[in-house]
Length: 184
Image (cartoon, rainbow, N blue to C red; front, side, top):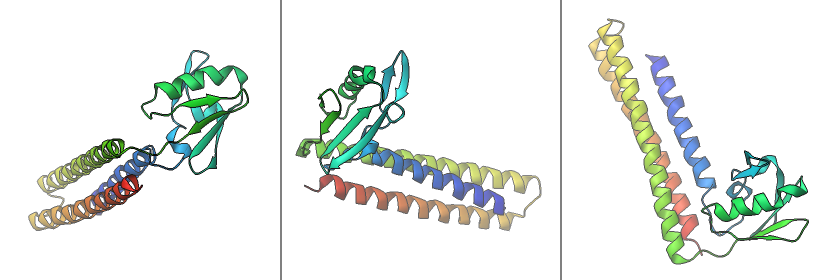
């Protein structure tokens, strides 16, 4: 029974970690390398993450610089950034690609907050799926006479408590991200 609980807790933590990863990709008013590092660039016919073909640095709080290791990649990187849904405009000076992060409009802030809520809801759904799987495993154990009916109910209560705690953490992360997004 403990292994079922540990597995459920571990899988819920992974869902929470994934939510954090998704949130780092949401653009706030500040520059962050995670905004662009996973953009797929067509590099000699192969889709390649930007972080594998260039160094990304943050010289100021509202700008990024991208320095490709191969001069032939400049055009592909610019095109990939323009195609991404970040709404950023790259400026190529021949040595570096500079991206200035403009302040967010109120409308864009609300869109990002909605997107953050969607990511959080996806995380909650994942956690509820883990809860269902754990409860199914406990029921199977009870059916196989590995645990008693009382142990089944206690196990289900424990799974529910873990689920509630993890969903509460996800909501707290969402609340912090919404504050960050709406901050001017």
